Amino acid sequence: METARTGKQPAFQLWERELLDSPEVRRKSTVAQLYFLDYYFQLLGYISGRKDRRARFDGDTSARHLTSSEYAKEFKSYCGRERVLLRKRRTKLKVDQFHIIAQVGQGGYGEVYLARKQDTGEVCALKKMRKRTLHKMDEIRHVLVERDILTATKTPWLVRLLYAFQDPTFVYLAMEYVPGGDFRTLLNNSGVLKEEHARFYISEMFVGVNELHRLGYIHRDLKPENFLVDGSGHVKLTDFGLATGALNPRRIESLKVKLDQVKDTEPIHRSTLERRSIYRSIRQEDARYADSIVGSPDYMAPEVLRGKPYSYSVDYWSLGCILFEFLAGFPPFSGASPQETWTNLKNWTKVLRRPEYDKPEDLIFNLSDVAWDAVTRLIAHSTTRISTLADLASHPFFADIHWPNLRATQAPFVPALDSEIDTGYYDDFTSPEDMAKYAEVREKQLTVDKVREKDDTFGRGVWVGFTFGKNGPGVNAKGGYDNSGAMATIF
Image (cartoon, rainbow, N blue to C red):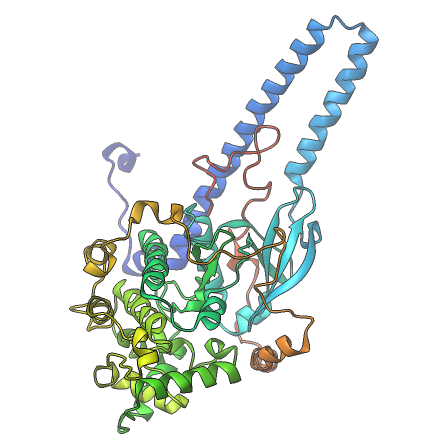
C-alpha cells in the first residue's frame, strides 16, 4: 500500500530488469495488453450493435401492428440471426475456410497461394509455413516480426495483412493479393529504364521504405523482388522477415567469412557493356538468382555485410543500388561469379564507376550528371549517405516528384489484368519450365528437412499473439468491429 500511495516503482534486481527489457518479454506484454483491450473492445461493440438491432426490430414490428403469433414467428427468426452472429464470433479461422485457386510463390520455408475466403469472397495471397521448419532454422522471430509489421500499418505502400492464424502444424498469413507480380519481372522485361521512369519507381520505393522506418523497422534486405506491382501500376513493399533488431549471428558470420575469403583478391575491371552482358546471362540462366546466397548481398550495405553497427541508412544504400540497376541494367557490384561479386563488395569504392557507353545506339543509356550524383549520394559511406526522405526530396534528381500525390500519378506501366484472380504476372507452378526455376529452392527445402531437430523444444507459447482478424477485418456492427477503429491493429 505504501508503494501505491507514494507512486514509487518497486526496485528490480539487474537480472529482472534485463528480463523485462528483453524483446521477447516486451512483445508478449504488448500482446497480452492489446489482446484484452481488443477482447473488451469487440465485446462492447457487439453489445452496442445487438442493442441497436433489437431496437430496430422492436420499432419495425411495432409499426406493423403484428398479431402475437406473427410477432412470435418473427422474434424466433430474429433470435436465430443473433445465434448465427454469436456462433461466428466463436469460430476459429481455419485453412479450409479458404478456397485455393493457384500457387503463386515458393520459398525455402513454405508456399504462397492465391486463395479466396469462402464466406466473404475476399481474394488474398495465403502464405503457408511449417512451424517445425521455422523452429529448426531459427526463423520464428522473423515470421513474428513480419506479422507485426503487417498489422501495424494501413498505408497503401506496404502489403496489407487480412488474417493471421495457425493450426498445430502450420502458420498462415493471408495478405492482400497484388496482381502485377514482383518488380523483378517488370525489370527483366524492360531491361534499362528511362530516367523519368526510374525516378518514378525509385521514388515510390523510397516512400514505401520510409513507411517501414516510421514503424521503427529497418528492412536490410531490399531488392527488386521485395516490391510488388499493384493493379494500377504502383509499388508496394513486402517481405519483412529480416526487418528486426539483429540479424541471425550465423548469417552475419557467413557474410563476414565470404568477405574475408576475398580480402587479398583484386577486383576485375570490366567495361559497362561487358558487365551488363554478364549480368543478363546470369539472369537468363538462373531466374531465381536473388534466392541464392549471391543474390541479396548485391544490394546490402557494407555495415550489414561486415556485422558492424548500422542505422536506417542501410536501406538507402540498397535503394541506391536498385536505382543504379534501373539506369544501367545491372547492379553496381555484380560479377561473373560469386567470388567476383564478393570481391566487388569488399572493394566497393574502387568498383563503383559511372556506366559509360560509346556506340551511338547506346548513348541514350548514359546517365545524366544529376542522376549519377543521386546514385553516389546513396551508395556512399554511412557518414555522408542520404538517410532521410526529406534530404532525398531536396536532391535535384527528384525536383519534379510530387511526393504527397505519388499514388495519384499515372504509372509508366499498368498491368493488363483479366480479373481480380489473374495470375499472369506470376510463375505458372503447373508448368515444368517455370518449376525448373525453383530447383534450388526445392533443394533448400530438402536440406532443411534433413536438419536435426534442435535440442530445445518449442511449445504453443512462441506463437502467442499470432492470430489476427479472427472475425475478419472490417466486420461492422452486425457482428464484430470496424477495422478503422483504434483496436483494429493487434500485435
